[in-house]
Length: 55
View 1: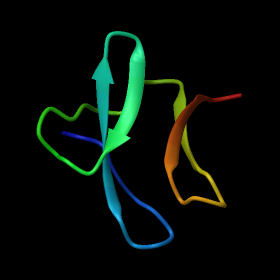
View 2: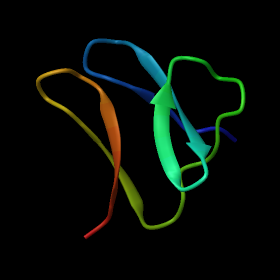
View 3: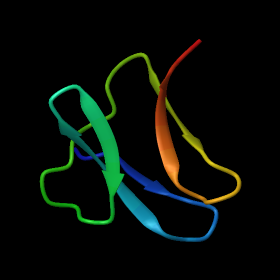
View 4: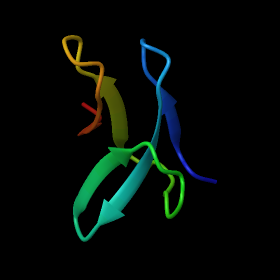
């Protein structure tokens, strides 16, 4: 099941991966699950989601 995040502005983003790089896109094709040990945070200024390691 693909990971989906809806930000505070109501926009849906889907998690993708290319090599070691993980990024969010508005397109759902090719999206992946959120890996273990990772957390999603949102940039308060822009509303864009980011993947970070859990602490």
